[in-house]
Amino acid sequence: MPSPDFVALPSIQRYVATLDDLTTSERDERLDLLEAFAAHVSRDPGAMIAEIFDEETRKYKKRGFYTDSAKAFAAELGGSRNAQLQRSNVIRAFFIANGRRLLTERPAWMD
Image (cartoon, rainbow, N blue to C red; front, top):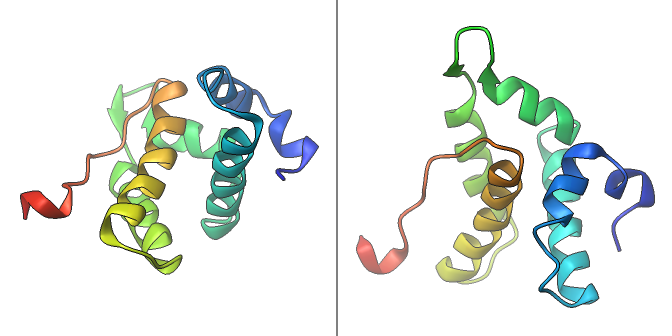
């Protein structure tokens, strides 16, 4: 179960608003994954959103870092390539819910 302080963060609340079609356990599973990812990269979710895109120059700054980190984090948890892709897609969905995009990852069947 995700920590209440984590769920209360504004960037997490924007993401939670996109999960209203899921059960409570599915929502909590995604939030747990996202909380673990934030710990993995040692950053607050709001900081991740702030640093991925430079508002002043209107350019992405750390998109490669977060794309690579999401892929590596998902792989560390093991499972099939498809399960890893699903995990990294949860992280991508968080960024999308906050108006930012990570680079897409190709499914194994496309390689």
